[in-house]
Amino acid sequence: MSSAFGDWRMCVCRGPRRIGIPGRSCNPAFLVDEMSAPSQLLFPLIRHCDLGRICRSVCYCHHKPLCCLPRPASPKHFCYGSEAKFPSPFHQHREHCVQTRKYVTTPQRFYLTPPQVNSILKANEYSFKVPEFDGKNISSILGFDSNQLPANAPIEDRRSAATCLQTRGMLLGVFDGHAGCACAQAVSERLFYYIAVALLPQETLLEIENAVESGRALLPILQWHKHPNDYFSKEASKLYFNSLRTYWQELIDLNTGETTDVKEALINSFKRLDNDLSLEAQVGDPNSFLNYWVLRVAFSGATACVAHVDGLDLHVANTGDGRALLGVQEEDGSWSAVTMSHDHNAQNESEIERLKSEHPKEEKSVVKQDRLLGLLMPFRAFGDVKFKWSIDLQKRVVESGPDQLNDNEYTKFIPPNYHSPPYLTAEPEVIYHRLRPKDKFLILATDGLWETMHRQDVVRIVGEYLTGVHHQQPISVGGYKVTLGQMQGLLTERRARISSAFEDQNAATHLIRHAVGNNEFGAVDHERLSKMLSLPEELARMYRDDITIIVVQFNSHVIGASQDE
Image 1 (cartoon, one colour):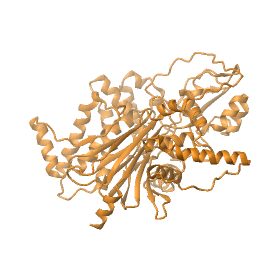
Image 2 (cartoon, helix red, strand yellow):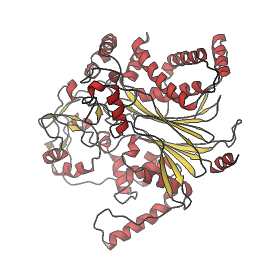
Image 3 (cartoon, rainbow, N blue to C red):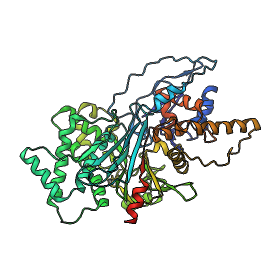
């Protein structure tokens, strides 16, 4: 993706050191120098420099052009990653016409009212309370809260939660899409079925297969807990069912007579679904819509962070850079965080070593500029067949695919130094934890949260929200010069924050409020929150990513009683 910024083509990716401009230093200061005064004031606030959308439009500030018409994209200008949210390669670029957008020189303040802010924050919130006894066992989960706040339009994150009906336990997961939402959508619909099937005993699998053969009604496998905005792709349901059926038929044929291991079931399900996504795209479908859809799914990508909770047993399977965090309440009432997943990116040294060992002749090129082949930020993901298929297979599928695919420069682009695919895997890393009474909650969230908040702050905010007990820390001003009057204001804000802590009825919403509205002192600033939520679509993605959060609250009494038994 390329565009013109002054006279320079630029490829823009979010995050530190992710602005690449051929022939220029990747120093953001160079960009600031070229900007007008209002833009310079704005620029330091841009945490994640995803300027792609701005550079594809024409923007005038004080009647001085910041961006010119974009030039045609060429493969060498593509940057791509789970944290670099570019438009789907399957969406046709709009014709760019010069639209003079004039901004008045006198600043005009427009703030959302608190009710308007709450309406935006609560639009996608969902809560579910688990019955203490579900007919099979007493649940260790009290319930969960979830919410999403989009930055991309449409949002590329997805979430899922379901109760396993033929086995025990609950499944909860967050999915972060990139290069579009298609892969995240497909994975959020299908992965839990693969996991549930892999956990079924042989007798139940045979019963389900016999029901299909005879045309009888099937046993329900999952009970979904979904927000009305969380939809299913009805058009693809038959295709999805056929692939799932093939999976359980193979499980029947491979029966070993041993009890299913949860960790093994999670790993196999992730890998099998990713394989099915790839196979469906290669085979195609006579239905033109489905043929286009499976290709969109395969060429886009998604990370996944999934938790399976059954009694005292907690398993977290993670592929990519989503995170799971356990909130633990210590004896003195303070909160500590236990990491339940590891990021699969360049910040994880073991992941870099894994890739180098798998591609020993490509040690210098397999990871460049903290990206896989210099392009992709997560080192594990679903889909992303451009990093898995051979060059011949990619060309064959693109050439035989629909015109939207064949005419797109992105899909025809082969990553540089592409010698020994596959470079990418969807195999998850699974971490097991036996729950204790002091384990109060689990947080699953996409990277949009973790980029804005430290894990200890996340756990403290949720813990204080759930218990209503606020452990005050000395106010830290972080090196700022603060007058007595300003300090009094900070203390007043703190009191107001405590009194308003329960305006949110959803823990995930409360956490998003802090993630978006916190100021430099760690307090929710309504003015800042209003500004962030008022940003137009073209600007919102420059400041933050999509945020998706699930907060699972545990039943300490049940966990304690189970431990005693």
